[in-house]
Image (tube, rainbow, N blue to C red):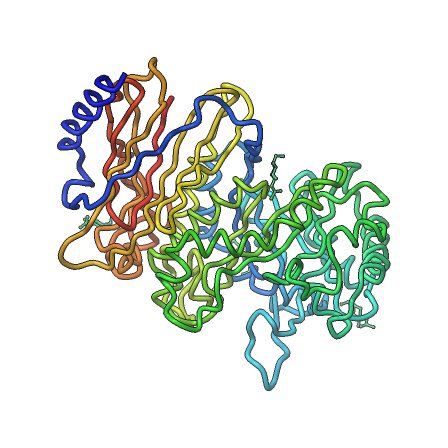
Length: 515
Ligand SMILES: *[C@@H]1O[C@H](CO)[C@@H](O)[C@H](O)[C@H]1NC(C)=O
Ligand SMILES: *[C@@H]1O[C@H](CO)[C@@H](O)[C@H](O)[C@H]1NC(C)=O
Ligand SMILES: *[C@@H]1O[C@H](CO)[C@@H](O)[C@H](O)[C@H]1NC(C)=O
Ligand SMILES: *[C@@H]1O[C@H](CO)[C@@H](O)[C@H](O)[C@H]1NC(C)=O
């Protein structure tokens, strides 16, 4: 037994020489990753529509173009179900309508910036993006609840406008009842008041559009970190106790998640830090558990990002990509059914900048976009062997994390994220991981790498010509308007006695395809 292990270790080490991307990195540590030999009972059956993008409500017209459509279609092409685009946010609860207005969205602030917290008047062409683009996607739209008496006319104008433009109720994945309602009534908005106002909104919507009989409501959309830290005037459990699900049609309980305020340089402490992620997501467990105790509702993180603040490098570069990958994989291993990456055209943390003439140069694909194809491929386009199931393999390390994806009873994919910071320059270090228990019948595996030669200095080709590739592929406005290009590049790794060894340079993530 002992000698067999020694032999396979040696054999695998020889194979390392053949690895391309890892070639320039120096191995400074090793780590064994014992894989589960069978599907674990608590593996989360992750939905096929887990990866998702979001546009702040008032800024939807900025995405009315082929470039944005291509980036969404490219994501969709890797998924077994249409991705869901969340249209929502603070502006979505402050909008009003003017049927005679030519401009799709008109900002009415005079002494405040026209950002996501601003008030806008929408005109009929606001809904054009739903009409012309994103045929590959479904939508979560937001009923503008507002802080005060719900305005039924306003709620109907938005929901019916979207419904008519989409032309197919089946493409409405969910209707959110308000946004970050924890702020309302001067932060005293209790469960009973929310349930009463939500009923007004539900009644208005069901009187005007035929949404079908399946669950459709997305509730709360609580601000980042508020529900479980006692800073929301309600709990998820309390809202259900107060009767939010009397119609049995609550589909999603939503909360928002930002890793940190982004006011300081936070790559090591916040983004490339698995311990920080674990600590923060643990705050959401009571909400996740309360949702799982309901009759069928799912918990989602409908608005998410690494940094909330303004430091450009931290927001747009490859550290944010790797954070996003690790965040999404860890969230799915903790029973989260969807993660939506939020954006508006001028937000530096955006996945892409849709047009030119904005405060941030565009159009361009930004680094965080690359997390989407990676996560979509880890979830997988087919689950031939049975339902997917994901687990986190706890390595008890702040800089290395691993996840296993099953299809049915079979281990299908393993993702490993090396969060050690490499910011470019002289030597790049690497960890050598030893994947154990791949099974005697497995003779080789394929490896895809999420890689940037420049490490955290890489913004992607469009941003600073420091390329980012996922399994050899890239996304760029400059090259092909967002189509996606490059030949898929995988490395074959031999497996001996159920063991494969793999060098992962610092600041890189890999997917190992077992079958
Ligand atoms: C996730 O689900 C598993 C299996 O039901 C359970 O053991 C675990 O406690 C859940 N975790 C959370 C955060 O809900
Ligand atoms: C949206 O795009 C379509 C197709 O290019 C175009 O016809 C329409 O005028 C655009 N609408 C707005 C409001 O820009
Ligand atoms: C309700 O919404 C409609 C449509 O946006 C708007 O015209 C009307 O002024 C609103 N009513 C109130 C009382 O705000
Ligand atoms: C970076 O990507 C661009 C666009 O695909 C390509 O033309 C260029 O050769 C790449 N540079 C490197 C160093 O690979």
